[in-house]
Image (cartoon, rainbow, N blue to C red; front, side):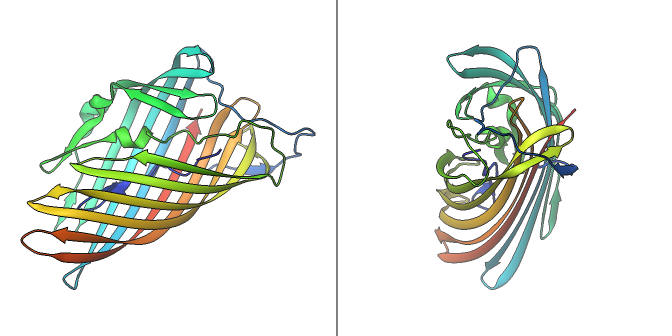
Length: 290
């Protein structure tokens, strides 16, 4: 799981953090395999894989001494099938089965209309090691919050944790660095994630024999752009932990949980010049549904 860190992503007056999640699963320790294992994704033709994702994001800001708290909760479900496979890469079709979002901030409680997205499909190409090569047709994932146009596309830019291409045994560690473009809402935003991964053991999760991978990550998000007649520049530094359960026999991501927190600052240049401190917490859960 080289880069299983994220699938977060940014939500503030200048940038959006999105987070994924699912349901709790029962786990049980199992005997590890006798030989080192090599992890890779296996998505057979004709099989459908469905995931539930839930997200939680809390941001606290102080604007001219006034505290502002924003909470974003998301619930998604989607299915994926293989369209083609060649030279170690899968072309996938993804279908949105359900989507709901709630944004709560001082003086407002908004649930953007996402019904038009339900049933829509788009395509994604990934390698056997989880590298996302590209997303096609994701314009169907657009929605609006107030007068601003947004997209759920960022949810899938980094959905598949990257997997190492060499054999692993318990205790093995590896470091990965990922750069993800999460631009949205008129802001240019880039997320750089450094993950320290460890194969921690093997557990039975919902009848899947899984490799358990523990992750500690450092995540830096930078965002620039113009909104409401002012220039914004944001830097956020976060740290967190994740646990991924990956069925190493079938080649399937079964479950992932993540939590992180950090601080940042928004520099505003316009009619008013301000430095706005902020703190954020993010939770992520993803679970295979069968």
